[in-house]
Image (cartoon, rainbow, N blue to C red; front, top):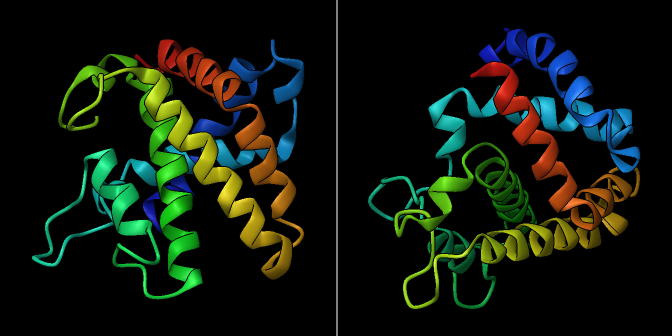
Length: 169
């Protein structure tokens, strides 16, 4: 059975391709398709808010998401779960930094005791994608280069998403 994201991906693919075309580093079909998939997936709130606390409430603050992904102090019970949480954190960070940079100053999405600065979200997103790439080098070596590219080019991807935002708003 097709999910809503399956129907939306063809809508986002050409918009992402066009918005990313000015950036040489982002003229990568795998990166473009991945980001179109993130956008299509995040159209469903259950995917956007898929990490939940013990009471089943969505975890939306970046600080809380990062804490939950920590295998020692958080709730990730396996490396696979940590990897999946880190992928979500990277996707969510990129989504916010690219489409809603103004939201990064909100304490709802930001940090408790640190400045509400987009650089924090960028740092967390890059780090999360880098961690996913490390996990994938062993478990899924074909996917590892994608997440290395996303980490290395995070700011450019966010810039490309700002172009997507202009196109769809």
